[in-house]
Image (cartoon, rainbow, N blue to C red; front, side, top):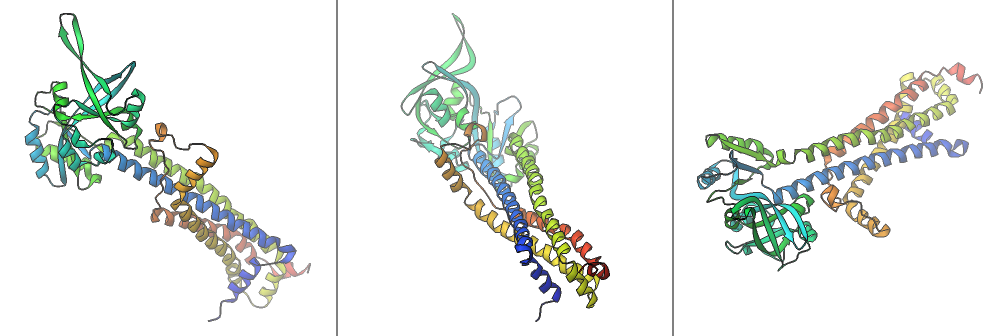
Length: 415
């Protein structure tokens, strides 16, 4: 089948070599700018998606999907609550825990930390925390051994290693003849864990639940029940329904509530970055206007001849609209391919730049992780490409309309 003459004429104008090919060069710059804008937007959105997914996975590796706690700070009849929780729909595991604040002392260094008492066997089944242990196994936290596993950053700041001892100071007093004294216990450090989340690596210590209960004088009680769910996205609804089924009187929480500020800030930043970087795409799209205006100005005589040969205003409009649409289509598709390729290799690119210049872009104390993950979501790619192409189509309308309004007599007067 023969192509429409509008297509042949429109593409021929883009390849114009008149005036030393300046029009073709401007068309190339417009396409290249659009490609870069689309690629940068896809890379940035992919990094934000990867950051959010990595943050979620690391949080869920250390914390639970949801927690069920007593209103008084302890859960007396926790065995019955745990059995009822395991029977609830959507609950895979339910593990008791004891958690409280303490001070860790080693030599002259004293740091605050959260102490979490866990049941090693149940903890291994319910969470992935045991996979992050170094120099120790979670089963080494035996009841009565008074052993502790510290977060890697906490151990580093205390200056301790495997085999060292730390003094745990409980912020609860014990009456003695000499006055009220804080309770203290010497613990053996058997290893560390590194979750990749600085918040936990710096502020969490793990020990056996029985030792923690004795240390904090819980007397058979626990702080609460940590739940692992089949669908973490329904954590808030599932734990609320469970609390109501148990008759109420419980304090419930879930991972989305505990870390809501992280994910809200990510979504806000993602939306702002989309709007800001879309300006780059807009600038590249409006370069098409200047390109087509120059073509229209240069081809006044050709337009007049086409009109005298019987071309309608609509034919002329389509001829020049094809040029803008073609620039937008090529630039958008090339930018999408470049953006996807860069996003898939962003971690190795960042590591190479860090190694070359001796800098660190991701500080764990600020960003909670040291690498730069990227996840390409096809919905984002489609949205970016759709908006970019729409801007190009809109930018094409004015020059094409001007070309269609060209009067043959006026254009040929100076030819």
